[in-house]
Image 1 (cartoon, rainbow, N blue to C red):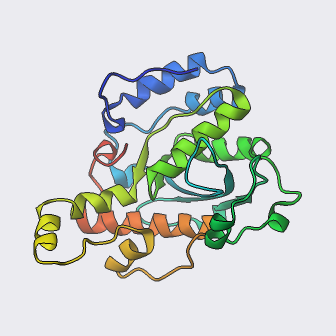
Image 2 (cartoon, rainbow, N blue to C red):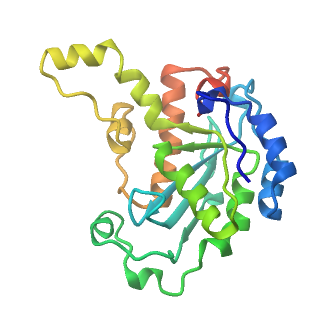
Amino acid sequence: MFIPREPGASSNQLDWAQLFRDRAELAVNPLLKAFYQQGAVSPQAALAEVEFVAMDFETTGLDATEHSILSIGLVPFTLQRVYCRQARHWVLNPRKPLIEDSVQYHGITHSDIDNQPDLNEILPQLLESLAGKGVVVHHRGIERPFLDASLRSRLAEGIEFPVIDTMELEARLHRSGGRVWQRLIGRAPASIRLADSRRRYNLPFYQLHHALTDAVATAELFQAQVQTHYSGQTPVSELWW
């Protein structure tokens, strides 16, 4: 069931609480109905009060309409702590073939996905882990659209929820006039990739393109971003999309 947004409304301008209430009434699938009934984080909530979950996907490609989710990493955290013992990681059997170029990035091969579950089988655990939490990703153009497209193909219902995008937070810092000045003096713009962003905060290097490791890396990056540029009292709505 699709609920249209106001024309021109960006994700951080949405009334997420009302959208969740509307979706809870209109959702047909009981898992989605239960997810929306948990509600969205209050937009006025201070970051220090929010329970977050970092989420990362590895996929067969970059187009949510053409490619599929291969693995999912989730790790709950707060501004003070990352709860690694509660982390979840799934390798999935996609409904679409692996692409050779993507295998070189994530290292998941045909033998790795043999006998692995479909997304449907782990959906109860996934939605339960996300419900009522502040979801943090690094590049919102992957996790949210891929999950939405995957559910539409399986349940005939999509999903929508606010996210905090650590890549977008870095972009805000580097897309202003300083970036223009860098181009004028011939200096390359700062990279906002996950590993490069972490390096600016003196965070350790982790092996890339593993969903669980990247979820942990994203959680740590967000903690560092808040400590450096924001405050625990910053309202969550200032950062989400």
